[in-house]
Image 1 (cartoon, rainbow, N blue to C red):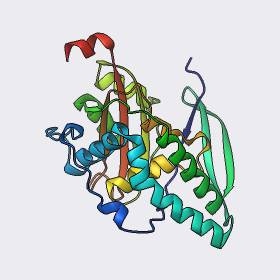
Image 2: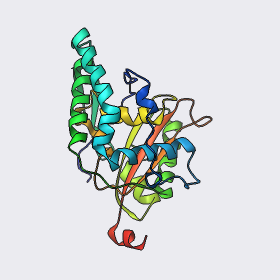
Image 3: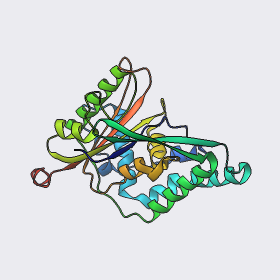
Length: 252
């Protein structure tokens, strides 16, 4: 029997950006653009992998360039506005395909935003470089399978209507993998950096699960997929991560 698993599904609010400069910083390194020749991906999907690899290659640099400005802004908002209005997020706990309980996590919006960004900044500043992730077509196909399944269901969740979970799909479509997991995000047509930042921020999410999924050291491969018309009118992002089996890694 599958152990208890907690998943969080949230339609993310737009992150407060105090200046467009954070979006304009140029950070080019061809070695990090591992999905450049992945012809099965759209350009924005390749760009998201590039962004994740920027982060993983030099976490302190990422903190200084992109997190610091948001942290400064959040501190200013907190000083001027106080804790902010109360809000909440939902944590759903499953055993196999059954929901065991649902937890409501209350917080104050500006206070939690400041806390999330401060912990993110501190974490990245003390984090050593992580593995650079390679694209994987099998994992990408797992993303597509999940997107089609949830589009037909009319809602997004980590579990497919057939009861399968991210690691089930990843291992099925990419047998070279031995483990995997998933992030989901929604924010319309937002730039990929904003999507990555809101997952790293994870304000209101107990344990900052999306953040630590992106920062998980064991991952070796990744695929990013964005839903589009006619499949869905709204744009959801799926980030699927995988860890290759040791013997398969030696063959590559």
